[in-house]
Length: 229
Image (tube, rainbow, N blue to C red):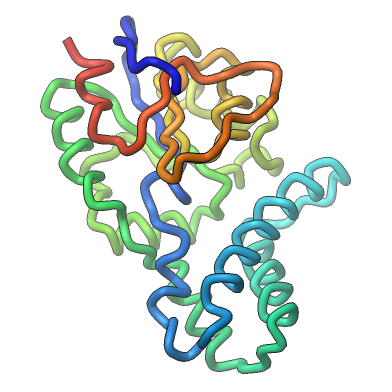
């Protein structure tokens, strides 16, 4: 566990979306009865392939929007589980556009905004997916920006993605506290130069990558105390 020490000089808190603000497993959870006994494995496989396909497509320089990546990875997960149900497939994809927020998200964003901290999302998500998720969660008024990799046509952890936040918010990397539940994303953001807090919601082992987050927290709840005066 990385000690949760105060991060001074932060001017903006920038959040990954999927897994950090939004519960990616809530889509399958909403249709658990229809997916059946394979629900947990389908959800895990869907997420794993979704991430793998973003990395592989970036390496192959074969960009496609995250919405398509999400469909492809779901198709793999359903095929792997031997599930053929077009209606269920459509409902799972629709559910992914209105994922549940983690319970502390609204309160943390409100606390940051009340103290004048700028807030933004920086995500692999397609713009329309992010807009739908933010609207469904009702957190749009709590954000200064919602930034999508659509603008650079490459996925995290490419540095061009993290640079989007600096350009849009007009801040230096060291003035950004970046938060992600994905350890590889936290490492990529640290390599770029952000101050990074890894939101380790499920007690995962740390990654063995070149750079590491400064702070490890279990939820977003401690964030205001880390960055506000």
